[in-house]
Length: 434
Image (cartoon, rainbow, N blue to C red; front, side):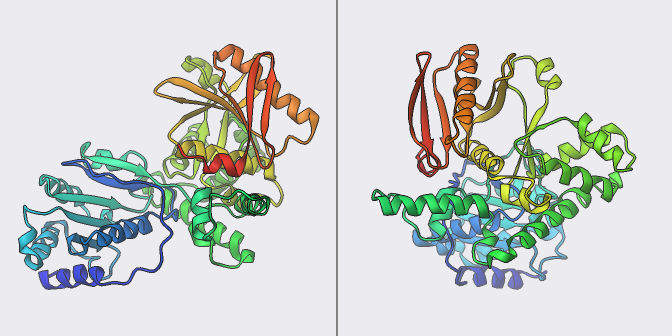
């Protein structure tokens, strides 16, 4: 690889027209002498978030301060790590006046393809003028691997599929609506969001292709992010697929590896139980599923109780599960889980000795901030009584009075045993600033 070819790549991007991008809410701040890394499930929009960053910089008159390199470019596939220094050398040959005087943004997509890439990043961030951001396929740069590869010199930013606010933004629908007609529009769109999910690749293709596209995503995740990422395991593909599909079919439901183990044995597959625990860890590391434990200070209690499973996207779970196996109620609960996660909460469920269960105990820095039920509808009195009773009983044990129920279109306030329960319609709660 020669310097002139790299300069052409740099200039090509600086002059490239970037198609209209739906801005994402994920804010990226650069910390001196550290790189930033965007992580998240495959196809959630990591690369496009870096295009958004470039456009933000260009709007500030900093287009020439961008050095963006995509390492899946056929011209760079064979570049060895010993020649990566040609990148900054080529850039500063184009813009010598910027060296050690202006901040330069090095945006590297798929740099993990180059064996030994880490030392080059560490070299770049030795300068306070260098702002480095990297993204990559989940297969190679999974949860925690960024930081270990860069010896703690990386600050991770986790990106998810589109939030409801981003979903509205893509379709150019205003969030701040007040009239009955406008509120009805938002209610219709929350139902569309529940049906469609948040993967950006689905937004502008026909609805009858959505499930097919999502199944393609799932197959690619299984192949690239699990099987190819762990070649030393010689993974039994049939076993992994059966386990992963069975797991994702149980979103918002209790799950134990022992129970799944019985089902897999009944299907005629042989395996060691440790293998299933390993698969569970791999799926979690790839951001495909998220296991949630019971709220307890005791590790023994947490390990003895079942976990609840949520998927990176509820529509993805529906697409790979048996038809109609995941109803709107469970999909809605998954949606609320992902929004709580996006807001930075630690999330658990809670169950009293009387079997009253609360969907979400949310906390930050070890302090409980509230109890929350996700309930698609409160129209049936038995559902309403069950959800409220669980909140009140759990609140008494957990010593908190911040109680909420999120529904699709109910709202109001209930007072039970002196405790106030706030009922929020989903579209208002999802658009609430935090």
